[in-house]
Image (cartoon, rainbow, N blue to C red; front, side, top):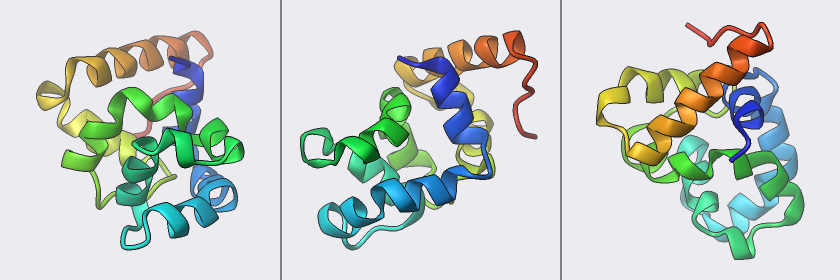
Length: 117
């Protein structure tokens, strides 16, 4: 688990652009009917088939793949939309995702970064 990477990916406005650049082709090939966080969750489930460049961008989200798919698949990657969605449903998240978010928050605070509101 890479908590800082998770935080930066989920909260960064640039994530949407990075996701499209690194994962756009993979998403169109592996998850052709999905967009947004739905495509993100789909790619997280297809690690062996996703490109290394894509996995470098999305790999920190792996503990939350199921929760993103079930609870936040309409959230658009980037701009903090996915993390806000996950946070709004924190008590219903899987244990692994909740722990990843807890670790991410600790890392954020230690680097002076505040979660998006």
